[in-house]
Amino acid sequence: MILCDIGNSRAHLFMDGVVEDLTIEDCLSRYAHEKVYYICVNERAARKIVKKAPRWIDLSHRHLLETSYKGLGIDREAACLGVEDGIVIDAGSAITVDVMEKGVHKGGWIWPGLRALRDAYARISTKLDCEIRSDLKLDGLPLETCDAVSFGILAPIVSLVRAFGQGKRIVLTGGDAEKIAAILPEAQIDREVVFRGMMKMIKDNETC
Amino acid sequence: MILCDIGNSRAHLFMDGVVEDLTIEDCLSRYAHEKVYYICVNERAARKIVKKAPRWIDLSHRHLLETSYKGLGIDREAACLGVEDGIVIDAGSAITVDVMEKGVHKGGWIWPGLRALRDAYARISTKLDCEIRSDLKLDGLPLETCDAVSFGILAPIVSLVRAFGQGKRIVLTGGDAEKIAAILPEAQIDREVVFRGMMKMIKDNETC
Image (cartoon, rainbow over all chains, first blue to last red; front, side):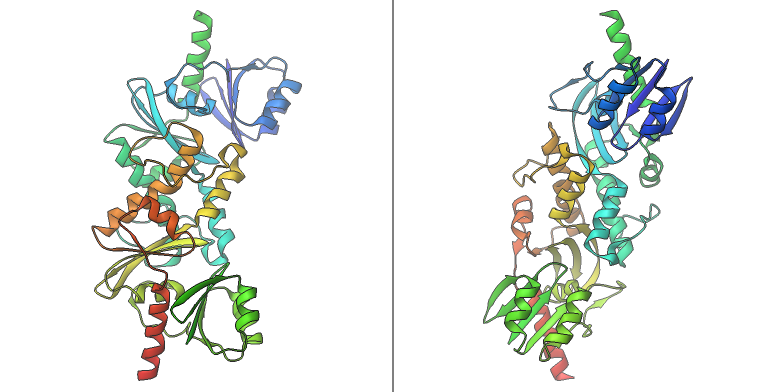
């Protein structure tokens, strides 16, 4: 079984227990003729799939998650289905944070991704065009510009995830999972969490 | 006495007890021939002033503030000089947060301004192009996309300013001061804080 999660900028493929990160173009050109179960939050990519990949099966409308949230992206929904209790952080083009309690989604919030945040600073002034320092100590006040920028990006993540997590398990996925793990050492990286959710969607449909 | 604080996108003028917010072009064309004390963090504007406004007096090198911070912008320095004890938030193109204790600057951090943050979300996906809701309740989890975006922008401000403020006075300035005051009702808007600092710089120079 091949599973594919298509985001705003990349495609993540799951096959034989291995997760592969690809450009959307690459993914489509390599797997267009296979049977692939997919979710997709990228409308342009969705149109291409319908045109070029006739055997692909869209799971985007198989809503299983119990939640009061309106308009939850199918990728967030799949990731949440993969976790019974805990905080799910998907750090990609955007960083989404969702809280799960006994299999029920309690809500969540969105930040721009690390790249988008860096770019936002750089657009304001070249002086704010800084590498993000994941090793920055966040319990003291920054004493120079690039530390002040890294603090502005990273301290909210640590502070709010811990405040709303209240000791819950923290599950990390997405392209920047390692960078977030560096500031949240109690978090566990889980590259398969979205695909576990997708498998639940497939299974649920089969039993209906 | 005319004082002028030139930022990355706007000029703020102080004359006869009144603060005026102008475009940099407007400010220069109207006051080029007056005697104006100024600070400027915008290199392009700085070059224009030197060319077009021969009577303007640059305060940018009159560093008075006691701090270990390297490369503190002169506008942040002026604002901090205007507060003996407290948190100083300047919410403009960027949002700077600085901590003052007994007249000494203890450090601070930087966020992109509210406009820059909105734009950062909008660039990721049109679905994230949302008005910021300053009336959003920040103690519960968001349950729809635009609330999730507003939460992502506003919750870090409340959470980190309170964590590092530890009950200190919070002083707000900059174009978005009102929007920040809506989520931090204990903060006081003070449009003159930067100019009070500039007056200290002028006075100190006169007594040397």
